[in-house]
Image (cartoon, rainbow, N blue to C red; front, side, top):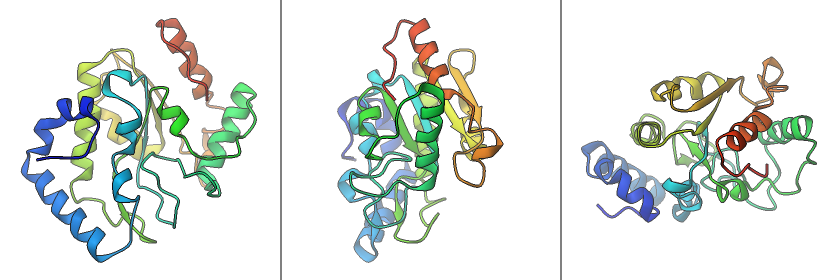
Length: 220
């Protein structure tokens, strides 16, 4: 079926698009967009893939659900569109970057600039009904994003996977840790950040690994 996704990803994921679960998922999502307010906007569902080609991926950050408030979700996990107030988890991410690397907290919470450098910002579920967290879970998105993670683990080498919180760590169980650099810590949400996210230094550790393996560091 014709899925509006970047060509490099289309080639690697073609088999997924033809599976029965994906057809069911597409029908569910289309109906939701017709019936309710759903985020992100339809054209941004696969934004993470559009900004970060399969061949360009260096780092993978795994999130859970898109933000479900007006104007927030833009298809990249933890990211919000320009001009939107930073949600607490994102603010904590920027605080850790400041503590780790000394970089000031940016005005915008739009993480497209990370994605354009090879950071795949992948939510487990790519759509959500407005004001209803988790409303599109267990409809097929998780099967699709599991396949994405496995494809990256199997077909690439030397990626950095940042797994924040129990959900991301469970989802990352398919990653071959002999081939890739996997960093784990608590989730950056206000409920968990003090239990190991603050002080994790994942951003400097990522750059040290990229440098060591001959890749360009990320400008966080």
